Length: 447
Image (cartoon, rainbow, N blue to C red; front, side, top):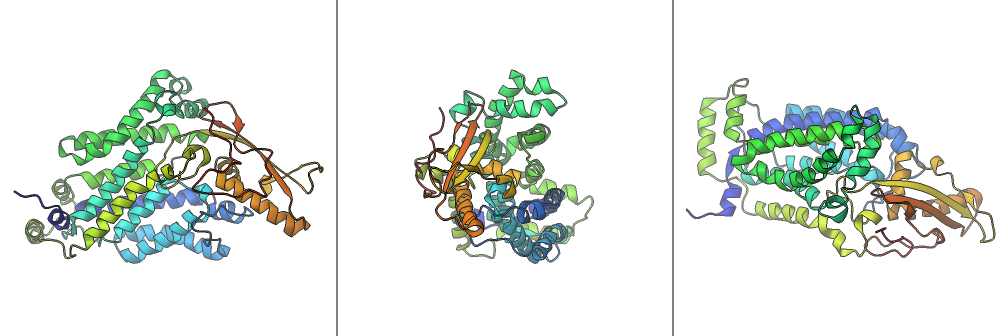
């Protein structure tokens, strides 16, 4: 039998996988709202800082009046409920995409990979229309494939970035993260043991590289699901301790995503016990799935291929730059570079009017919150933006023009000794920043 990729992708199939995943996905979004609410994100994360670190491509996204932002945050609570119920589904999706996407793009120091994947999955859900469980819903094969593909991309690229000297030879940043987490763990000695460190380092990279294919292949699917559950629960237990890394809702999201790979007939039979399905609808739908194609024409496949191409190319864009992506932060976002390094930073900015003046320490804590300061010390573009803000602030408040701004930023990268991140002798008020090239005021990555 001749294999025709277009016909396979355009064929119909039972949408039960997305029907069930949609409910759990909405529940995960509710957990995400709770996460924002519990840290008072709008007041402490947006209003309190004197300025925010805009992404290079979205400087026009700025804080709105407090009342409007709190309404938008409330929408991120209400919309997931309608997503779970399948009511006003597209309105709820668009509302969530706009509001959550707005908060996501306000400040790059709050970037998180699970925020990114949430928005991508919301986007894919726009091509899906829910129905009641007792009614058999159908979707094109390409839509479920894109959901599966997106999850596999997260895993696979998360493994690819670990194929480096620090991870494989030094077991970094695992060793540094265990040092941070162990003192507040119920089993401190266990987390610092060589067995656990090697298990997390090598087990983690093997898992990331292989799990997507285990889930895709029918014969290994159940084993893949079990491994996924164990892996994410382990991460939840380890990395939610202290500074070592708050991973938030990511484990729950990825555990729920296992539903996307399960056999649709088994899922249909299982849920029919609680939601009896119209047998006539099942028979009609089964016939249509086997013998008809989706109502979209072949132009839909251009979107499918474009989406796949973007997701495959975007994580490699840092190779266009001569700098080290994890040292400077250039090209680090939107690339699934998860838990790939550990940095401890020490930061001091000084300002003076003339070279002979005594430098005055800039009170960063009066401008930025703790998260922003810590992330700024790890990203060259944020250092540049901080210096530019200080220049503007001195001119506005004290009428000081052309001040001299220096920064003593020391970074311990993956457990190495502290070294300067930027040249402490360079006047940052006069430098320029190239997001795609080498910036001479940024010091080289330590060996």
